[in-house]
Image 1 (cartoon, rainbow, N blue to C red):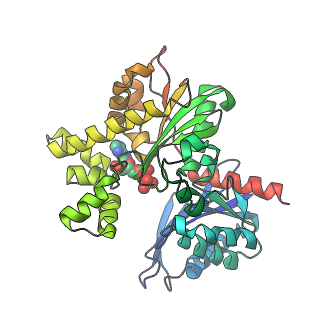
Image 2 (spheres, rainbow, N blue to C red):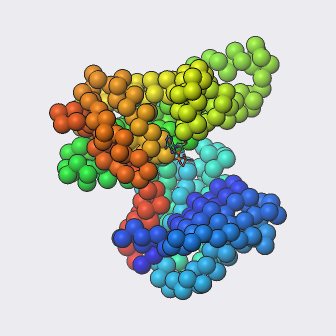
Amino acid sequence: MLTLVLNSGSSSVKFALLDPRSSEVRLSGLIERLGSDAASATLKTGGEKKQVTLKDGTYASAFGLIAGELDALNVRQEVQAVGHRVVHGGEKFSGSVLLTPEVMAALRECIPLAPLHNPPNIAGIEAAQLAFPNLPQVGVFDTAFHQTMPPVAYRYAVPESWYTQHGVRRYGFHGTSHQYVAQEAARMLGKPLEDLNLVTAHLGNGCSATAVRGGHSVDSSMGFTPLEGLVMGTRSGDVDPGLHDFMARQAGLTLTQIMTALNKESGLLGVSGLTNDMRELEAASARGHERAALALDLFIYRLAKTVAALSVPLGRLDALVFTGGIGENSELVRARTLGHLGLLGFKLDEHANQRAVRGQGGLITIPGSTPALVVNTNEELMIARETMRLVALNP
Ligand code: ADP
């Protein structure tokens, strides 16, 4: 039994064919430059990698190529379902769903909430329904896991009509990853998830942290959009909303230019003036690059403050989980974040922290400390499992 997992973006499709039970990946790849006549695919099977040029830049030819690979591998008959990553489900979706025509209509209603992400997600689903007409298709939302947040966590203190008429509230993102690493952390700690109060920190190019009580999200650092919260690769995270008007008047920037700067020219890149890549920043900071050092300091300080804030709704913090490219690999970010969090009882195990890199997860604190651990996220596997769960519920 195999599941095809698709993540359709505006110019790319990331995909994986995997067995949700054994988590074995049979085929994976990235199709890039869609929408242009230079579209190409990188495919990985077993240990082998190959590059293929597409005949045009449409989703149809992207999925035609994947279908052809399924035939070439002789696994088409084993594929049971297609799972799609969908960025924004608004308040309509608190869990994964079978993508019926009614659900597709509801998804279109969520477009204003995620105008950049949801249209390509929808176009990808429609093309996959044509390419794989006999397979059930399931949508797994980045926002769904956070629909358990209570109003005190999800409402902004703005006029109520902004919420009731326009849906302005905190939604939270990276839900698939937070849910997956919370489950894995419980397994690694040998305790039932229902009994655990966790903060999970997903630190990749986008970064967010979530308070997970008994397996349910009760608060998260990203809000109405993925711009809120932590310092990220190119996103500012929290800023004073008053600066938009100030920069418009003072620097003559349009709202679009301000939003572009906050999304694409801020964060680690904006502060360092160098790069949004944590590896390069760590190296530059070690060489004495002052702005790189400041970017790191800001990233870590704001992360630690957020972890402390997210322990408020938990009452008791049983463990902190690091994941994402930075969380899984940067011993420096982890060590220095825990260094700020002595008040929550964290005591680093330096050797364990150094060992937890390149796919090696585990506990990074000493006995007697509040546990902190590194868990490798696997959003594709989570989407595949969710997809098969939904298919089993709707035979
Ligand atoms: P995305 O959010 O795009 O999926 P990833 O989760 O792959 O991104 O995370 C990318 C980030 O992880 C980059 O900032 C990269 O520098 C960082 N990273 C990867 N490996 C290391 C490492 N060994 N040390 C520090 N940072 C790392």
